[in-house]
Image (cartoon, rainbow, N blue to C red; front, side, top):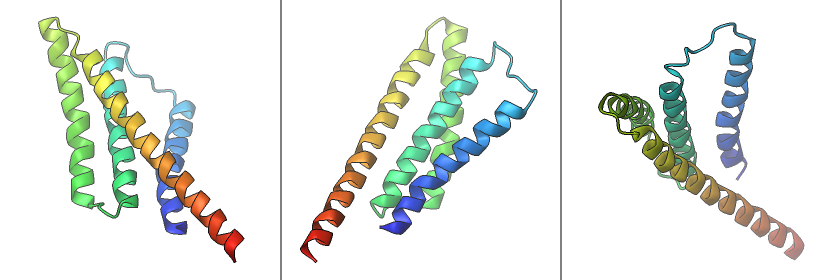
Length: 127
């Protein structure tokens, strides 16, 4: 159970480090590109949450995670760009779908860790 907790801490620590470095940097994303980068970040977060979930379930494969991470981020950006070109707001559709997946994965992770914590407390009371 201890290894699984570290698995969850890795993306959290990566997010903290990335946010800190981004805050200290003077670089800003041009407003015209901001929707694409935000969608790519959401796609990356979706892949990370899915990777953590599959790791806990014992189904994690590095090649599937890496290809999913990059392909989802690129595809989300391309769909948003194509939507802008043809006048359809595909950006919002992608945000809804990826946001739904992130929240679903997070709820399953939360449920797993709460169940594990409850099982550990029950086992400690029995001993």
